[in-house]
Amino acid sequence: MTRKSSVVGGASIVASVCVGAGMLGLPSAGAGAWMLWSGLALCITMIVMTLSGWMLLETLGQYEYRASFNTVTKAILGKRVCFFNNLMVYFVGAILLYAYTTSSGLMIESALGINEKLASVIFVAVFSSFVLHSTRAVDRLSVLLILFMVLSFVFGVFGLTVEVNISSLVSSLEEEVKRLPFVLAMFPVALTSFGYHHSVASLRSYYQDERKAGQAILGGTVIALLLYVLWVVSIFGNLPRSAFDGILSQGGEVDVLLSSLGGVIVSERVSDIIGAFSSAAVFSSFVGVGLGVFDFMADLAGFDDDRRGRLKTWAITFLPPLVLSLLFPFGFLLAIGYAGAAATVWTCIIPAMLARKSRMTVEGKRAFLAPGGNAAIFLVLLFGVTVGVLHFMGVFGLLPVPEF
Figure 1 (cartoon, rainbow, N blue to C red):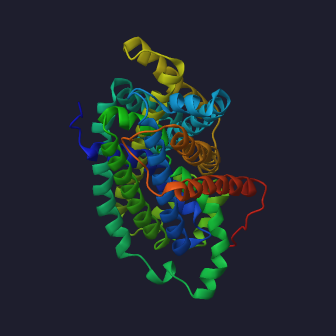
Figure 2 (cartoon, rainbow, N blue to C red):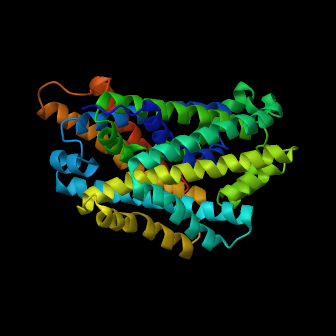
């Protein structure tokens, strides 16, 4: 029987998974390309990542509702590909939880004045408890956090947009052409910013209706895109491009970005609201990513869905990132970039391969069919490979570096 759960809840989960990484990583990643090319990169990435999520949903439709990403990959592409895909899924999920845990510790330390590491422990204990409880608990919390983000975003960004310098967002044609090569560095972070795919199986199982799950995916990626564009406009319209020289030299850390932004905001109230919004973005993404990794690891490890089994899954999902965040501080933007490189495997390459092989071998009517045919599959596959190559070009210093 089809569940009557609202699409809004699922869209909120997808948006919450996306928004934490992108909202705080994209301004630094797009500083070289600036507004025009960053906005275009976000739109392209959103379209491709929605298509790839639909392809995964289409493939899952041939299996029972408890089936996960791991299940379909092993059945269709074999054990070796499945093992590599699982490794990449856990690597990205863990590194994002690692990034959010550390960033949250810094934010809570700044707000409450308690030790950063203690703040990280408290944060994980509180917010991971929602994942431990149930998907419905995450649904409800995600809706609340998204509503809070939207309200704080409206009030906070309204204060920023009043001060936006339009002329700083758009330059001459000659200047925009010069900035075009710098957009290449944007794509690995943009891809991570739409990396909700480990939650697709959870959504399908939750709704038990592929069409509803597909609507939730589209709704979530549209919400994320709108928030990203408005946020980047507000940041680039208030911070001078030269300010990013100092931000990037400190690893693109969240607190450095917010500190630089606070230095140009006249109203202390607006600065506080933006800080609260940024915190909600990280908190909601932690819960959304945590849910996806939790369900993935439960299926992979074969743990039961009872209290004892869920506690085991909770431990292998949240404790390793917490321990690493306590032991090894890192650069936020660097972590997100590596996550983007690994995410190309399971957000683009594997979903495209699954859809292609599934369509070749499985006959009969499908509960859901991703649009675009073979052209869409090729587009998603090409995008994934290209973004992976761009990341490693950046690691080896082969991408253009902007001068601020």
